Length: 389
Image (cartoon, one colour):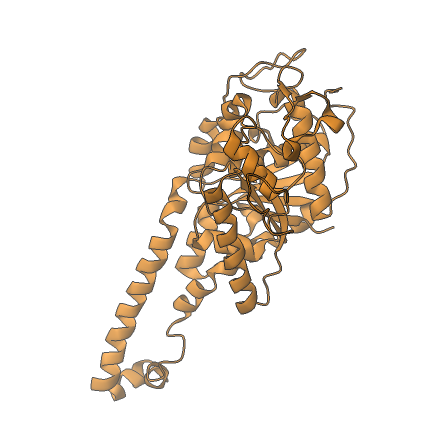
């Protein structure tokens, strides 16, 4: 079986892409026993901060160049495609602060701020190449015979402006395919690859789109957040028209950081779910494909943004390492985080959850829906997990 590759994308920042990526990756690995590879493609490295202990990021992974930036930088420098297998964290126990029991497969390729200079690095290299080519072009006019003796055929090559000028410039144009090619070495080893993308349009975002089978967009029920999805869909449509290799499909949007008591969130949520609200017409059917299970703006989730977080500890679990959780449900609140169901019709899930719900159980339902949308089976051994009634 070849892994499903899914990008978590919204060009609007602050919508919780990294949190959603972490939730899906950990629930699929620990609850459903899927083989999961998480890739942090954002230079802010929020997913890395949440899932890898800082000492391993600095001392073990950055020092040995096991970061996603190396895949792009090597391609810019030499056209070499580094296999993703060479960049995966070598010790699986460094990934996630949930205690790994036998049979769990959750691997990761981390990010660092080095990735932020990728676009600038490409521009510098392109300008350096143009400077050299311009100098050769001048020689081709002034001293054509001598130049052709040193580099046979170069004069004819430089005189055709329609050609790509150098192999290196061709490499730069091909960089959008580097992630897709790099992942070929590992797709048979995983069930799913989750890519946490940066906000904004960039080389890395385009590479993720080209490499992915699906994309999911976390969205805060606010107009600016929805605009970010429009921009993603427009970008993908243009890439599909230009590149036959782009096969990505839209799996839907996940409402995140929802404040169910806030009028603006209730109204926009209703419109997203296809209902009329506040004298406004709903968004066109199928435009946002909202997931049924939405994520509340819960303080507990905000605390999970750092690996060594401080939340209510698991019952019956005394970790040897501080900050570690015994089970995935324990990390996401277990029976300690119970929230009131929304009375708003569009957000009301009382038929399934009752007047109150456990956050951890809600996230499990969301993950189940996610797997169905991307075509993964929901089978999983729950014998090692914490029962949530």
